[in-house]
Image (cartoon, rainbow, N blue to C red):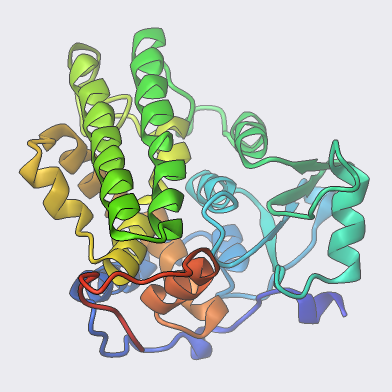
Length: 314
């Protein structure tokens, strides 16, 4: 039973890139496949990503993370585990048909045991943890290796500006959901304007911290948790808003002179951990990345504008 719950596949099951109508999604997938060679060197990451049998090795300090294939919040600690090459197993839960084990696991660990069970759930060292931001911080504190890469900002000044950016970019998330939930042209127009204003504020935060930054990431050259907290929504914004609302995020950024935000989005979108996890989402769902995200957010859309533009299909 444990084996059937895990998203374990072999190298032979990696599917070739299928033709897609969404050019950007096709490009992201191609980049993800190109990054495989570098990732193959890490056995623990291979196991966790499903390209080798997953394993529970509590004696060696391995973690088990229960996730949903398409959840943007659970994507955060997953990225950190891959970045740090942590020993972990990945278990995938269907949130539309939750298992009894998953519900029991959540109720055992959540502050509100009667709440709606959600992901991620991390099991490690005898503890069971929930809430993506807290799990992310735990992963960084636990699995960073001495002398190795750190996902925690090393400069207090860069940390301030990085967190300022992350908080403001995340403020676009509820506006994104409002765009999806809009039920009229007027409401969509209003929420779209607010969403663009949110992107401009995020860009402003990157500009404010320019003297503390020496690279494209939120904290400069160092890739950190500030990036991870924000970046999982980048492909979802792009794919889902284009499909349901005919809204081109990259075009809006260019038209509003958000050069710093444009550079940041390019940097996080081409990050190997991002490319690799996006490719894995396709393996988990058996769908193109575009359709996996479109289907995930379909429940928030009850109205379609006549001017909503092109859609993406399999």
